[in-house]
Image (cartoon, rainbow, N blue to C red; front, top):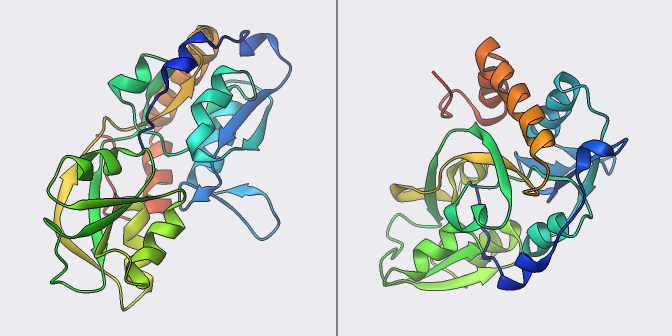
Length: 241
């Protein structure tokens, strides 16, 4: 559920419609488990891989997966290097000025702090966050000192090595890490950010957006989306009523 700062230069980029192609290229980061990651076989895996494959099947589309670093994931969509972004991306007003979105496939969820101690200074200390995320933007508006890193792994490492007092990120990302590591713990209060996670598409690709929207709706209606969310994120994850 990340948010990306948008450069005005992206406004000048254009691309042709994806539905005219034989293959729809699904762009993801591959570095944000359990949303998306690279498995031991070198393939894209995770919740969004399973979800994306199911959406493509329901929409009767042939899809292939492409990985791209987070910082340039929107410019490379608009320039035509792939046709969708399915990468834990929060739906935001800023991004909606540049690209289009499907409806969300994960409801709005909480962002959390994780630290080595319950006494971590969250208000005036040093807080790590991934560059160009809604979490980084939130910390920048507080009295804490923001330190940004290119990847989520680096934000956690910053806490471990003492560069930061805490990391602030999606709860869905931090909770499994805290549960698997006795030295790391969730601290402070949850913070509600973003409008849920959706697929990003070029604004010209309305037919492709509508096809994925219909597929997401069908998964919500038959319960398979809730089942998939719970299986990947746990029974406490936010689901659809």
